[in-house]
Amino acid sequence: MADKKDLKEVAEKASETAKNIWLAGLGAYGKALDEAQEKYGEVSEKMNKESSRLFEELVAKGKKLEGETSDKITEAKEKSTASLEERLSQVKESLSFSKEDKLDEISKKLDQLIDALGEKKAPAKKAAKKASAKA
Image (tube, rainbow, N blue to C red; front, side, top):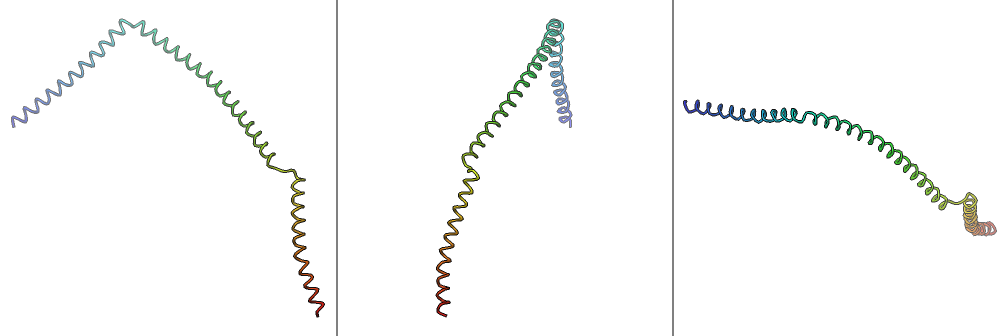
């Protein structure tokens, strides 16, 4: 049993030592930060003010550029839409016929159909006449 108790004490001491090492490192960081603020406090304050001013300046510049970019994008969209509509109109014109052309074409086709039907009916009428003559 003494062995387990000894191991437990060693583990607790090791844990406490590790914690103290961590705290010492943290303390060193805090001390260095305090000394830097004491020594460079004015510089640090100036840097904070300057970085805030620079940030505001960059935001204002970004807003200006955003507006310009938005205007240019809108202009480009309008141009491309107008160009596309113009091209579509040209294609439609090149593919379409006038109403008169279509009517002439339809009229010719109807004439051809009437002629074709007339030729088929003529032999049938002759055969009917022959049959009625024989009777």
